Length: 124
Image 1 (cartoon, rainbow, N blue to C red):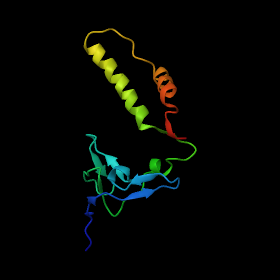
Image 2: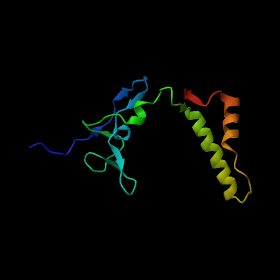
Image 3: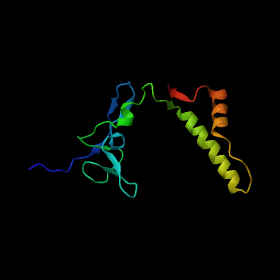
Image 4: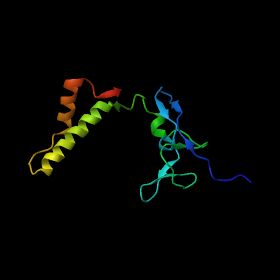
């Protein structure tokens, strides 16, 4: 009798989607990835908690990652994301020190980044 328990192994394989974007084959990128009521990652097939970097034989690419890179989506550059985090962190630090300030608008942060570094998108 075959067991319902799927053996997990550490992920290291990269799979390209239909648009040539490489996706790490792991529970975090799987169509069967779910979350329990405490926001812990679990497998929708087994109901068991899983680590994001594990992978089993039933892995299939999530719908969102299948369309990554198509005409309908855009991927932001990591540099832009890090600069946005830096701006928000400095604003929070200033507020924590008692300074009254209005947070910068996302539009102004985008404009500043694009003036210095070009497009904030890696893929259009």
